[in-house]
Image (cartoon, rainbow, N blue to C red; front, side, top):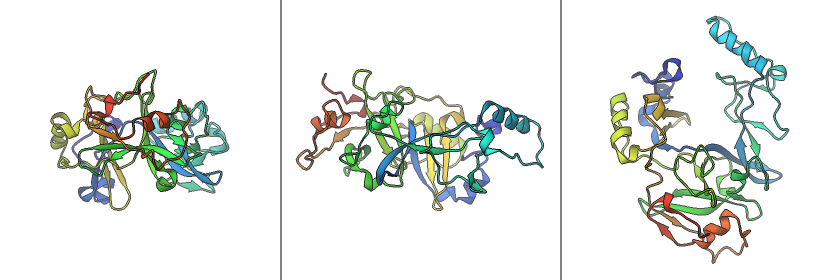
Length: 299
């Protein structure tokens, strides 16, 4: 995170040592998009979408961890028993890349969680909104990104092979109470946004007051937060909540931008299932909407 947070709630005006070490002053600031994190990597020999699944401690394990945290014994290090202290996860679960290992076992982070991923199967009930944005037969994902024309967004099918080993954010109707107002209960809309896709053109200076006023008074500041992409690969995040600011907002920067649907139906000889998102979007090929949140499918 960018600022030191007492009790992990509000930011102070001190930039963290980690952020300075990663050269945050020369990092690329991007919009923090409010959704659920996904990952594209190989499964069953082909590129698959994977859903975020953190391996969490059992009640007993958590009790033990909390007792340690509140005991103020700084000199001692907490030792997890991975087999006993953690809830089971599916066999297909894999740990996130930046997780640390000890004796071949993944180690929990400072919150006592083990970030990881599970593959999203075609007709998954549990991950049905994830599965709505991928078509494994055609090998494509439904992606929202910038169009070549400045100031315009684009929704298009992207080959999963092109986003292999990338992380993305799944946003939409049934994710995080739909902060972008996408779709409806009858016609839900979900989309994948590659991490770092929306660079902030006029970012604030790295001073708390500048960032506060940017969030509060700039159109570009109507976002959930900022993620600085540092040259060493480090990500520094700042959420509006860290500054005591509300989220979600009635109007967001993302959902008020114009968007075009680019499906190139002539090139695609694939027949999408009639009720699928891919089918609905392919029927809107070439259409432009004044705002992302204006996209509606005909009943």
